[in-house]
Image (cartoon, rainbow, N blue to C red; front, side, top):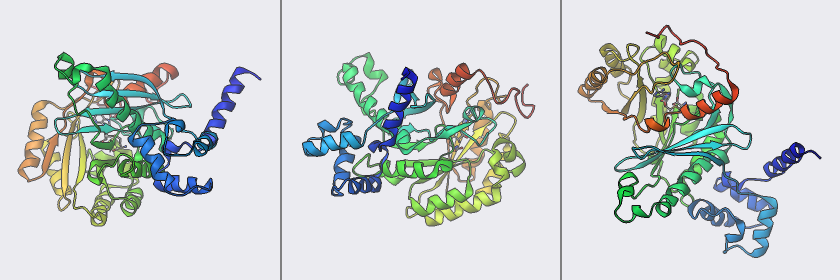
Length: 396
Ligand code: SAH
């Protein structure tokens, strides 16, 4: 048998058994039931994997030796491979992760004074083709499995914990402490990495259940956010099955412009999207707001009249407005709005009583923006681009 063949067979053997990392509570209960074990094993194993970071069944010492051996035979716990681990000057940390099929995805940890946010990917590439998005340029490859989504959280939690051991200065006083302040913990997760989470619905929902499970990461529903470009039927389904925060990538205030920037708008135009947002709010138990994301593109959507249109459009929807400075990448054809344009835009929204945050650009030195690093890797390996030209004649 050739080496390649053996490799393929090993991979297939491994993938046919369940990867317990990717099973939520009910999935684990079904699994234990199927091997003739009691359901409470699910919470025991969940705790070992997600809270204690243990991935070797033999270390799970509240399970009998027989059960540990059995689990090693019929299941596995497999994380993604860390291909790159980058730390920015501003403390942002980014991981380039390799999937078993050789594809790459990214996860980014963004520390702030009062929180630590992990930005998680849901797909390899993206089908939605938003004109200013670097992931969109890579085209769509495939959905991530639940295990591949939650592995990003597991690895980030684990590697952040390791920082303490690697940098003794963090607990004492040294230059290192300034760079890596203590308390670098994941307090929030945003599904804002590569891909459209609502087009990988089941796996994303399962992964979020694990994030919010008290026997796993125990994040509250206010601290887990799904970001969508506006896949209306899936927004309705999501509201039915889960209570968490929703972010909607708006970026334009009329259908003509939004059709260009966020082409899924042609299928679900603004009127339908706004109605879906209202329905979503009605279903949520907690009276939280919807976050709207708006990337400011110089001369495209950053004029005072756009701000005024935005106020009209969102009237009656409890809103947290996130203004995002465009993160430029080679060949995008767009430019970042000037500081004055951003200030003027946010001022108009503030004035109308809208809670508005201008997001800071983080981790620029490590290509921390969505899809940028994986994009470079894929470019190098494939040497092709889906789009050759800047679009919409934006190059100046
Ligand atoms: N598909 C989902 C989530 C992934 S993108 C969505 O559209 O919401 C997460 C956010 O980053 C989105 O608001 C997206 O529009 C924004 N984004 C994408 N490319 C960007 C860029 N080059 N600069 C700034 N923000 C960008």
